[in-house]
Image 1 (spheres, rainbow, N blue to C red):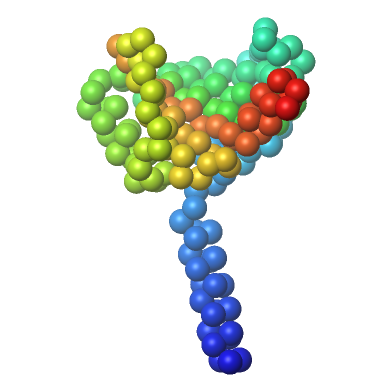
Image 2 (tube, rainbow, N blue to C red):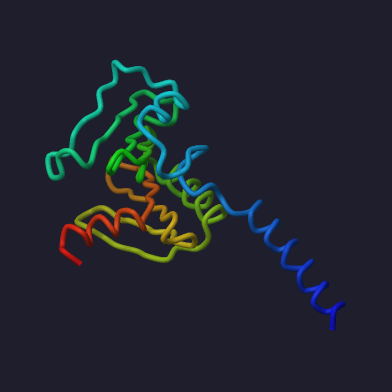
Length: 167
């Protein structure tokens, strides 16, 4: 009996180690959810000349930091903060071609699993990858002339929305 328990415990440790290595960071890129504006500025070398914009819908609670001309392929990154904690990042791409969109969709599928949601709004399509929900939900959104990926700490966002509704 002790041998079975020992083998089971050893197997559980190995599984946990492998799972931790294959699971992406719960956040965006190398930044975990909940870091401060100052942390994001430091990590991505975003100077204080880039202003933190307050949300008109939720003043004092939600802020956006917009980094422009990020790279040859990325036009903008929008870092969103709720109660001074990073909870969402949107990456807007320059090239919105079908080829780039399909390549990006394949990359997201390989990293975050098969799509778990699909939505159309007007002429835009949104595909959700929710394998790691509620810690991380990834959405690919595209339409004529637009292509972006949004990474969201869904649990914090949902708790905020529920609090606004008094739930």
